[in-house]
Image: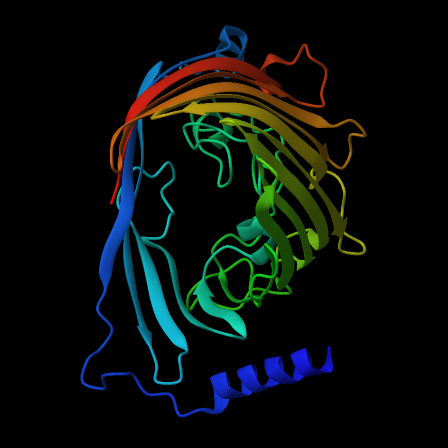
Length: 379
């Protein structure tokens, strides 16, 4: 045991103390392109009572997109340490007007000591998280499809988990942070992250008490003929700005998938608690404390895969109301690979939004169906 510790110490020392020069000092890092382009044709129908109560007639058809171009580069130093950079450029298909043009951007250092990452990326708990399977890739966060609330409108009175309709702990999104990943040990990897300012990015003004700590533990391996993917996450810190009521947040998540003979069954659970700043008024204040869970089944054979999944969340909502807001999603998806990096996809589902107020208030309750079909290109 002592010998192993000595070897580890020497490896770490070698990584940080050995003069670090590129193998070819005349050559800079060359960037390679990667990314994807996914486009969907959408047909949707909201509840008639909701549209009447809100005096709105929502479109029954739409086109949704999710596109990114990745710039990736790396080099290996004389001492064996790897260094690299990744920049993700959003290429259109946004569902909001305030999305960054550059979605993520970070540099990393990797060696026998593990991997250190600095920049804009998801936190450790979010990166490790495993959720229910979905053949079309519309389930795991950040939420897409029905779970994004952009196909069937979510009433403003209905609250989601802080990170939206998911079980992952994506509270600080892509805010700048430092991440560390341990070397994999028998399929286990531990990741930790620290976000100094969870409510601002880039060179924005420092937010007040908005630091977030996160940790994620992941496992990937096999037990006999069964392939396993497991995760556990923790997040804690502050999410308050100068005008926000919420202060401390504590959240946990677990998830897993098991695959045997092309059949994958999986699910996940998330739970979070928010504490108000002492003396904060409760009237009209939203509390995102709650829990969410999902479960799903997927079958894959050759180039084709199909899946079915269910999601449920219960969130406190208005502090002045002791009841909870509830969201339910049922979704079936399919994907067929036409060739390397080319696939057609489809999804059909139903979502129900229930506010904690009485069911007679149609403006605070909505439900609807959606059918989506599209294509995906990966490069």
